[in-house]
Length: 126
Image (cartoon, rainbow, N blue to C red; front, top):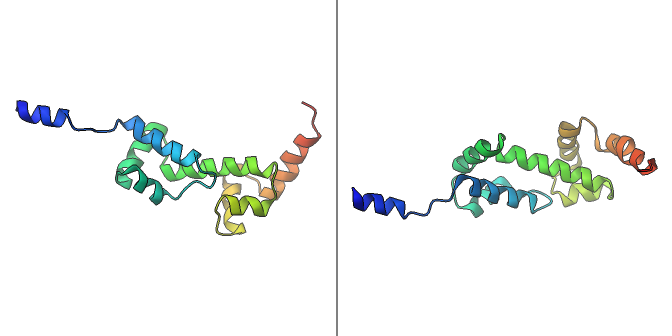
């Protein structure tokens, strides 16, 4: 029993929060948010394990978090870049995919967002 306790006590197991933090760094560190499968491979754990840890720590799946960060990045980019550049920079397959994802998180199409939010901000004195 003592030998097994010593053996398992010496095993390097990454703390849950460190795994989740590493996943967040990977997502936030790339503007287009890398594919979940690529992130999983770089972390060295199974997809199910990482998803369960991530959901435990943050309350959403790793894919959902990645999509949210991608949408936030799109909002930031739309303030200073044209629509097609945003689509290309963030790695969307096509314009329809981008518009659908953007509308899901903002309730506006990118054009409506630019017209209502970005142009309104430009005219405001803060």
